[in-house]
Length: 198
Image 1 (cartoon, rainbow, N blue to C red):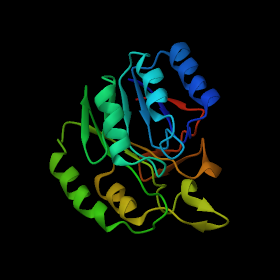
Image 2 (tube, rainbow, N blue to C red):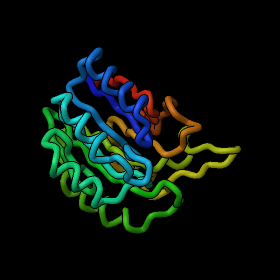
Image 3 (spheres, rainbow, N blue to C red):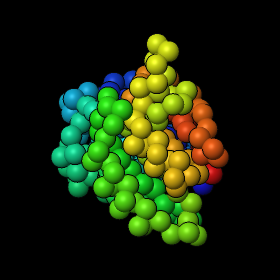
Image 4 (cartoon, rainbow, N blue to C red):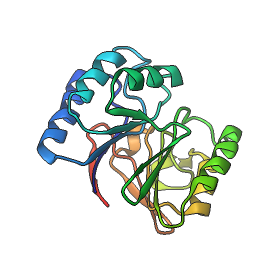
């Protein structure tokens, strides 16, 4: 499977057009947006309509620049865009879990309940891909000014279930970086997007 992952477009027309061009040129099977498609929800309907025209499934979660309601609405209005925030999407031998919003807190007690739900949905025969907006604690992707500022709850979840891949965003300073937690590959694909083959 070939994935085009991206995050933190912040509604910039030229950046959105770049993702559209990359999709046309690279022909991925699936697109994944790890949040902040818009700048505080502005123009989110226009952006979603343009992405929907690609006729590719786009899995999305909210970032800290859009609400759950913003994402739910664009998914309702655009058949190719699927909200996986607090939910799951299954394709081939993969389960895609999503958890969006935030990005600023080292601790997120709400995620503990969600992680329990996710763990109950894991099928031993399936490979897990986890999509979150928040950077993962104690990795290259959460390091700012010498301090690790990522989410510890999400890190514990990754340590526990060992997904094949984690896609995150939020810290623009760490775009296009990759790291590992045990055997789990962690990527911040940034606004340019990254092609991932799994």
